[in-house]
Length: 151
Image 1 (cartoon, one colour):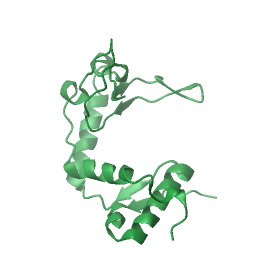
Image 2 (cartoon, helix red, strand yellow):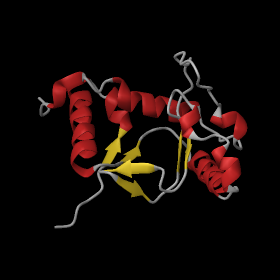
Image 3 (cartoon, helix red, strand yellow):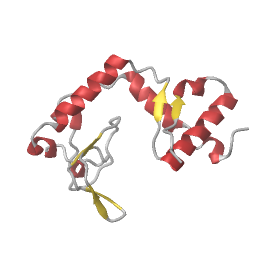
Image 4 (spheres, helix red, strand yellow):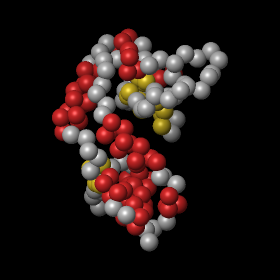
């Protein structure tokens, strides 16, 4: 049986309590059972999406030494670059490289660690307030509903 990637419309969060509960249930189900999903209704323009994709292509085309300058192991917030084979899943290397990004928060002091700002060292990426809001909206109410089916 073919699996279909779910498409979740973020604007459903603003359509009343019942629709909000249903959206959160659908979000949990997609994340748990499929592992990923498409998000629509987020307010991010196609132009902004294209700009971020272009910036990511430029970043990953940089020499490895430049990417390692913002290596994740230097970040107390787990943001930054991870080289190919640097992540483990079930004890085996994942053969992909990645750049973990997110809203910058005040770091928790950790003696002996420095906090590198990936956005300042890599070519700046254009992250819109809409993108930040979309991610925050998806994560803000993960506790609502407790995973129960919608009412």
